[in-house]
Image 1 (cartoon, one colour):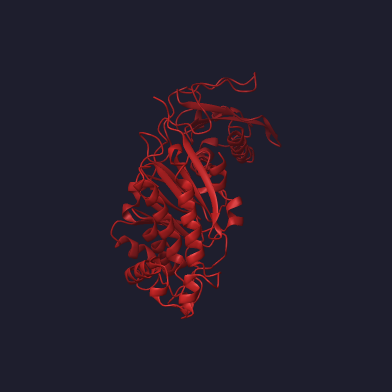
Image 2: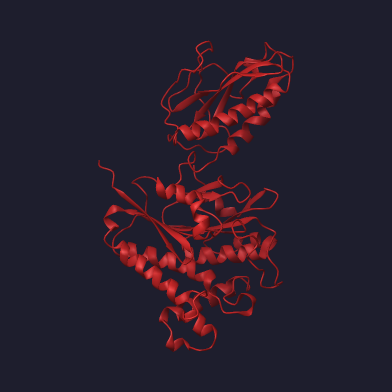
Length: 250
Length: 169
């Protein structure tokens, strides 16, 4: 039986890199997906004064003047904010910034575009948050390593799954950049937290919220339907929610 | 494969240094070392939780490998396992050499081929050292992963990331 050929592609966009692992047969449609990601960058970037997000944030444009996707993103932010007791927010520090959702949301949309076109085996990694579909090769699940935040270049653990997402929040590259919205101060109780579940947009937002809430994260994710968590604390210890073991790679 | 062997070699060297700074009994050493039983060629049992069933990652293991030093006794490996023999290290306490058996990405057995003979019990050392060594070798290569999830990186950070190494493979 011939092994299906794979295509790997790394695309710099949104200030980071999106990594694709696809069947080679997806090559003709990949450019359209990449163009869409660059459109998301132009529309949602808080670093561009003329993006819809910036104009809306300044009050210069209403929702009706912006891309309809902006309303979709704001709606999702509201749901996730409510589910996380406000620890996930599109108003960090009082300024409108939905970037915390946009990244996961765009990874998920990119993956959905590809699966909708019949490319059912894929992995899309946007800056460390991964959406997987199907199997990388017949008979085995995707194996996703979780970086050890305290020992760069090594892994803390490995998870495995087929149609699932893995999103990690932590301090690694940029230092303590995640602010606890309720205290206004950087969250420092966890070195990293990884959320695993069906959709990367939710997993990404939940990971951000979990990281911001620190010690309360474990109980909170335990009560979240469909999502599990694994965390590394600054002293190197680990904890995980009860259902996380189902994702442990053998 | 060479990179994995080199990373592995430094782990083996670490174990040797650990052994060489303790004295252990000359006669008991090869019998006592290795929780799974040493030198008997018995099939390797996976230490700790789980095992990457059948897959041997980048260390393409298939059956026994003769050790590098012709004077060292052979350590036979069960199918699917690979034996890596460290260089002889001459410590202040005498020569030391170990062979480590890998099954997939886990160290399943450590066999002392040559040992110092200062009289201390090496069994105690290996019981403690073995699980730590196994944990230290969890790298992107040895774990045979498809992608890495970690804290958000920028384009500059990506270049140094494990994910970029996977994308180039």
